Each structure stands twice: as C-alpha cells, then as structure tokens.
Length: 211
Image (cartoon, rainbow, N blue to C red):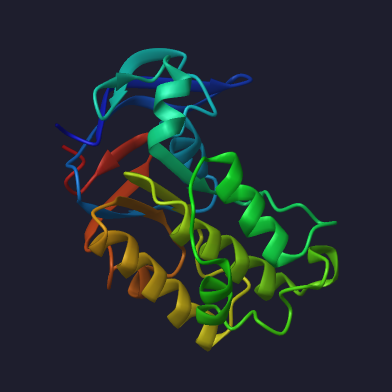
C-alpha cells in the first residue's frame, strides 16, 4: 500500500491558491526530498499530508486512510515543522519522557540524549537552550517516536556541522527502521544523501517524478 496518494489537491490560503491540482504518490519505505523556492508551499504540503491543513478540493490517502480521518492519519505520521512543539518549562529529559508517555511508547531516554550529545543539558529547562540544541532535541524525539511516515521541514536549520551530521544519522535510522521519509530542505545536497528522490514544487504542482 502506498504511503501517500494525493489526487487533484487544491489548497487556498486566503485568496491565494498555494497548491493547484497537485498529484503525488510516495511508496511505503521511500525517501523523498522536496525542493522549491521560498514560499513555494513546501511547508503547506507537509502540513496537509499530516492532516494539519485541509484541502480545498481533491482527495488524498495516507497508508489507505482518507486525509479527512485525521485521527488515523496522525497515528501514522510524525511532522517536524518550524514549530518545534517543545515544552519550554520542561527539561529535555522530561520532554522526551512525556512524549513517549503521550504516545503510549517506551524508549531509552538517557541513551537518546547521549546520542544527541545532550546529556549535559538533559536537566536544564528547554527555554534556556540554544536554537541548535532545541533542534537536536526535536530530532531525537522524532527518532524515539517511530512512525510509518516522517515529515521534516528544514532539518538542518540552526545546526552546526556536527548537528547536521546528527540529523543525517537520525534520518538514516528512520529509513532503516522502515519509515517513509519526506524532507523539505533548502540544503538538498545534504538531504539527498538520505532521501534521493527529488521533487520540485513550482506553481503549486510537483515536477521531477511526482507520480
């Protein structure tokens, strides 16, 4: 069963049509890099696939679930967007433990923090962490909360060279675990190492292998 099937998707934000009759097929276990200029709608497309936005017209399915069945879709999708979704008054350790609990999962939080080089900051409130450390934490949470479909918007933003390598390794880990991966990135030379199928969003439609 395909991970993502979109047909004739239109999405308007105000008076502007961001997506225009868009079609997309992504196979289960596939890894895709989504390219496009600023404002092309990459973030919008990821949010639509995650059921955070509703299409104005058209239809879509995520692992066979209609996009309108938001609960089922969200059980299968992990979206890491510009809003990192961290609890600023909790520590990194508490953020990860709480996320696992909320999703009914278990995991080794201490080991995950160590892999992300966050052990020294593990018990500091998130509000006092740097932007790069917060990004590392969200990527670590993504790795812990295994989902069949992983959507990442700009995974390398606010990361130094070491952090970028960490992001690549976590994305590789998601692929090795069987997750389907869609990455919107301004640095395709990095994301294409893990997500080699390139799609370009232009004028609200996908080119270069959207089907």
